[in-house]
Image 1 (cartoon, rainbow, N blue to C red):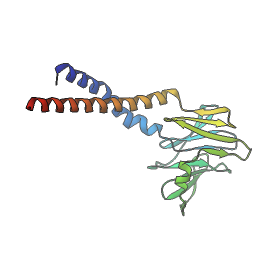
Image 2 (image 1 turned 120 degrees about the horizontal axis):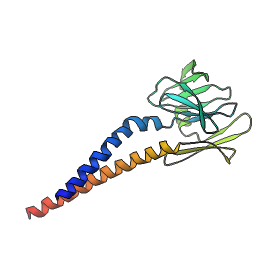
Image 3 (image 1 turned 45 degrees about the vertical axis):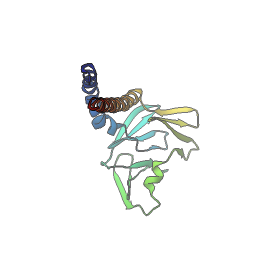
Image 4 (image 1 turned 180 degrees about the vertical axis):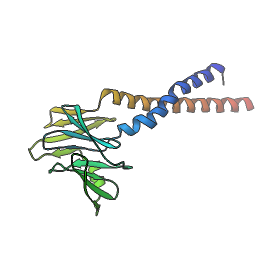
Length: 188
């Protein structure tokens, strides 16, 4: 292996590895998507790591802390209560975050149903649709009004984390292949 190749590899690791670790520890858990819901006032709720964030016109207006679940998906019911499902249990909360009740999920799994929820029809007749492209989430009302989209900062950080992972993995693979190829040629 040539010295400049090793230097480029080490510089690449020194720059990207801390960012990648920060992304895995801080950014990724906070950018995980745990579903969405809409209340009777038309406010949009987005599930994050340990909270459900309330938005109006794509501006955060509130936050409902919820108990930490390993994985969960949620939605809002017609009576403005929050339904949170994990792999075996369903919990109901009010919009203030107070626990109202819970029950075992008898199946088919509410968790799986909420995981694939992409469309919500409200009592008032509005239709909210979720569209996702590479982690960029957009929610539209009645097909044309955007009521929520992932912030560009969060999206850019997510893409940079993915890009840094690919670069680290790619440079490591190239370095290993080149070193292995050189070693074979030297042994001949």
